[in-house]
Every structure is written in C-alpha cells, then in structure tokens.
Image (tube, rainbow, N blue to C red; front, side, top):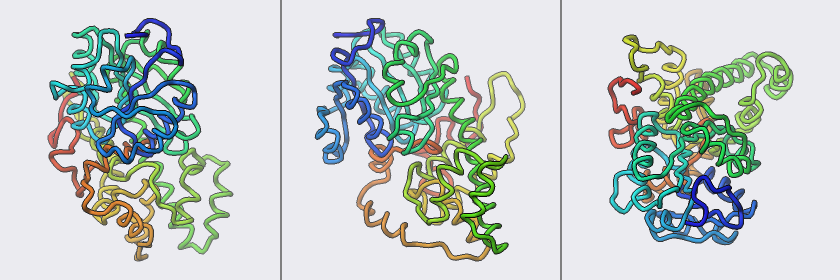
Length: 363
C-alpha cells in the first residue's frame, strides 16, 4: 500500500477507488480526477463509466479488485442493503479485500446501525471506516459545494480533509453513525421545507399571483431558503429532472420516523416528517419516484384538482426503460442532496432501511 492512513494524502501517490457513479457519484468522482487524483471505478454497467474513463479513471472488474488497488474507497450507493452487500456481505467484497491502513468512506444516505457495523468490521482488520453522507444535490456535487456530515474517528476524518475539500465542506459530527444521524435530521428539515415551498407556490397560483414574482418577493425574507434557491424556479418551470430521487427521500424520512434512540422508551414524535413521508410516498405511488424531489409540487397540485404534466415523466421512462432494473438505477444513478426509498408507496422489503418495517432502536 503506498499511502495508508496516517501517511499524508498526496494526489500523486494516494490511490482512490469509487463505487457508485450516478449523477452525484459521477460529479464527485470527476472533481477528484480534476484535482489530480488517480481513480479506479467499479460499475455494474460498465458503459455508464465511459465519461469518467475519458477523464482518466480506470475501470475495475469487481469491488474486490478495486479495493486491492486503492488506499481510500468511496461508496455512493442507493440503499443500505446495497452498502451491506458491497462492503460487508460478500467474501470477495470491498472490506475483505482492503489492505491494512485502508479507509472506506460511505457517502450513501444509510442507517446509523449499519455505519457502526462497518466501522467495527474495518477496525477488526486494521482498516478505517467513515460514514459521510452529503447534501447539496447535483449542483452542489458539480460545483464542489456539498455539505458533508462525517462520523467515525476524528483523526481519520481530519486526514481525509484534502479529499473532502475537493467535494465540499466536511463537518465532523461524532463517532461512527453520527454522520448518518445528521443526514436523517437534514432530510427531515428539507422534506418539511419542500412541502411548504410546494404549497406556497400552489396557493400563490390559485390566488392569481405571478408565481415568479412571488418567489422573488419572498426569497429575501424569512421564508427564503437554500431549497427555494435550488428548486423554486425548477418547480415553476416544470423541470423535474432529478438532483435527488423522490423515492430516496421516502427512504430517508422513514429512517427518521421509524427509529428511537437507545435507552429512550418513547418514540420520537415527528408529525411533520410523517406527513412529508406520506406526501412523497404519494408521489412514488403516482409513478414519479424517479423524478426529483421538487416534483412534490405535482402531488399538491393533484390534491387541488390540477392534472400533472406527464411530459418529463414520459421522457424519463424512455431514458430508463422498464428492462432496466430498479436496483441498477439505484446504484448507477445514485443522487443526493435532499435525496439518497421505495419503489412502491411503502419501501419494499428488499430496499427498506436497516430497521425494516418495525420501529428499531439506534444502538
């Protein structure tokens, strides 16, 4: 291993592996290549890696092969079961093949319990693991302005700073799993904001206001927000291209609604998050789970008697025909921001968050 932790990271020596090259993952990996790092990538559909290969990335035939040739491996996948399979479950998987001193950084919006399991398994073999989900969507990923919530060993997180700084701003949140807990809280906050923004726009239109003037008028006041800046114009312009899949947000909100802290006998009551999850689940039920989270406005419009615009949904179906499995789309089109859910109104058993359908405690 050329530069295992704690030897300082150096673009000319540190070898980077990347698994998960959807909109978010591809943009983040591209920034590391542009910063001078050598990247090896793995994709279940190799043709989707052509852009990164054109920038200089090398394609590995398996996660095991990628791990063997990497000092730091980043993962950006769709669901906790995907992370478990790639990192932990297979004998020839990522962690089993990572050499001592190697570091796994999981950017997937996943479950805190799984993050702790990965950290413990990595520690047993002399490696390190950091859970580092992100927020900021496709624009933040492209511009290197993601918010990164890091959990794990503080010294390892600090060691990773040269890499994190290329992608955005990292904040150390605490021990293993704390990055994921922060992301869940972020999604609860963002989901509520999207509900309010959608309802505000629908009300403004029904009241006869120019909705663009409405956005301009309120963006500088207390109702203004980063989400309004990111999605307000997209909602008005019927641009529902995903910077974050709506179905992933259902999964993330579910992790907040369905868990309690260890030692607390009472479930955390989150009525707003529960309502937001129900509304986004309605969006998934309408067949729009692969649209961006800003598409929530279509749910509010339908509740108020306005037919949704199907044009982009049809374009999306043409881009991702049904022959492509949902799992392929999840791994190879992973998107975060308000993101990182289900394919039905409720998540399927295979893609449900780690606590499954019953309430579980965070250990």
